[in-house]
Image (cartoon, rainbow, N blue to C red; front, top):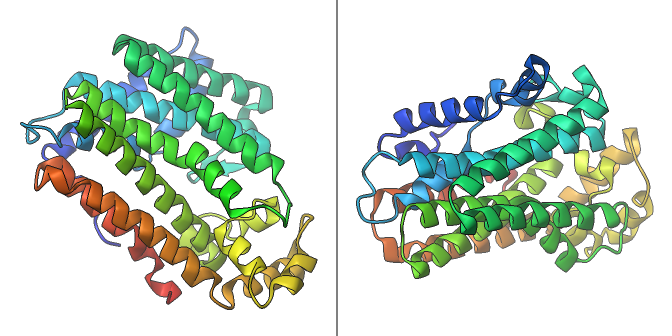
Length: 329
C-alpha cells in the first residue's frame, strides 16, 4: 500500500505523537469507567486524517515548515473527537459488534453507556473548541449539526429506490465532508491564515470529503471483505443506496435491480444486487464524479504553490483514487 501523503508533512512524526497525547488527555474523566469507555476507540488506533488535515491546513501559510502549534493540534483533536463520538452513536444505530478490529463500545458496555460515552466525546470536543475562541466554538457546533443532518437525510431515505442523487450528495456532504472541511478551516483559522486562504482550504476539505465518500461507496460494491477490512456491500443491506446504486438504477439493469431492493436483503438476492450494480457504467460513472471532486480540490491548492501543507493535501487528494485501480474504471 502506498504511503499516506500526509506523512510527508514536516515534523509529522512528532506532531502525530502530540495528537495522540492530546486525544488521550482529552478523554480523561472523573471515573475510570468513563475514561475507559471514552478512550476505547482511541486505543484502537486510526489514521487521524482530520487532525492531520488541520496541521496541513495551518502549514499552507508562511512558515509552514515549523512544528504545529499546540492550538492547531487541539483544533484537529476537537474534530477527531466529534468523529469518534459519531462512531459510537453509529454503532448503536447499526447494532455493530466490532469497530477498528476491536469490540465496539455498545457490544462491550451496552447501548446506554455507548450513547453517553459518545455524548461525552462531543462535549469534550466542544470544550476544546471553546478554548480556541468563539469562532472555532461556533464552527464546531455547526459541524455537529451538519453531521446530524446528513445522517438524518440518509435515514429518511433508507430503502427508497426513488432516492435522488441530489439527496445522496447532500447527505454525504453533511456526514462526511463537513468534518474534513471543518478540520481544514480550523487549521487555517488557528494557524493565522488570511480569510481568502481559509475559505479556499475549507472548500478543499469539502471537495476532498465528497470524493472520499464516493470512493468508499464504490469500494462497498466492488471490493471484498478482506480488501475493505469490514463487511462489503453493507450499504445495500442497510438500504443506504449510494451513488453507484443510484446510477445502476438508471441503467439497463435498473428494473431488475429495483425489484430486488426496497427491503433488507441477504444471501443470493444481495449477491445478485451487487452484481447488477457492477454491470454497465454505474461504477465508472461514479469514479468519474469522484475524479471531478479530486480535480477541483487540487485546483483549490494552486495559490499555495509548494508550501508543505499544500504538498501534503494535494498528495492526499490525488492518492484517493489509487484504491480503485483494481476496479478497472
